[in-house]
Image (cartoon, rainbow, N blue to C red; front, side, top):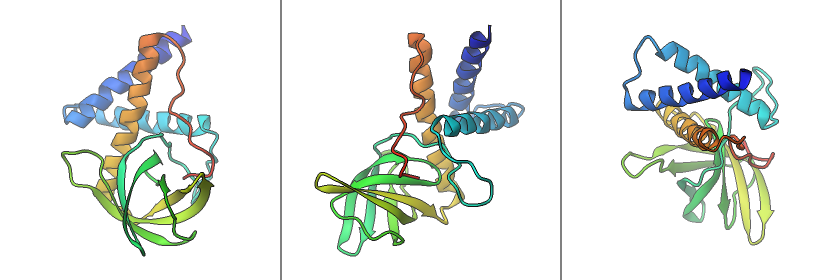
Length: 184
């Protein structure tokens, strides 16, 4: 019985998310959707075995593995890459050479072909060498609310895509793909 309720809840959440994106979610459902979004995010953060510590800057947002085009302004010039994972608090990306930990790096994140990129700055928090490249992990600095909202919507798009696969197959799925522990 509990699995049926959870399945229904997940399907309902994805339906609400689609309507939210379209702008057709009724104003009366918006608080319930936002609460469900918060609850699902908290559960997924726990599933990803991330620490949740209030008010100390610890990671509190769910990450998804997604390849999203990004351009960084590095000392050597503009460098294009794809994100490895993404959350409203940060990202990781593969680079030939990464700036030192602590460096503040301007970026442009292209979430879709039809919209302007999310523009901001990120602070490098880790560099992990990988066969001829570096996986750079960074946290966003002073990201505008519009940018945060657009990234958050993309994260929940990815989560709903995985939920739909799981519901269609009737089998548990990895929700979402879990990136390495060194990324934000």
